[in-house]
Image (cartoon, rainbow, N blue to C red):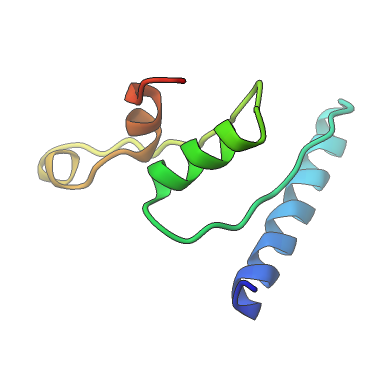
Length: 83
């Protein structure tokens, strides 16, 4: 069972997403998942396991040394072979 803090964060994220979807006026069903591990591995694994047909991943633009040191999760997910 995930730690209580993770469950609370999931609920907050789900509520914020529902609010955003309502504000932009579209109807869409979505699910939220909790996983522990390396983000790009876990996101890819869950997407594959649930046979996701769409995945939306946020991105932060970094410049300079930070760009070289801190890996970009979205780019790592996109560069993984599907299968």
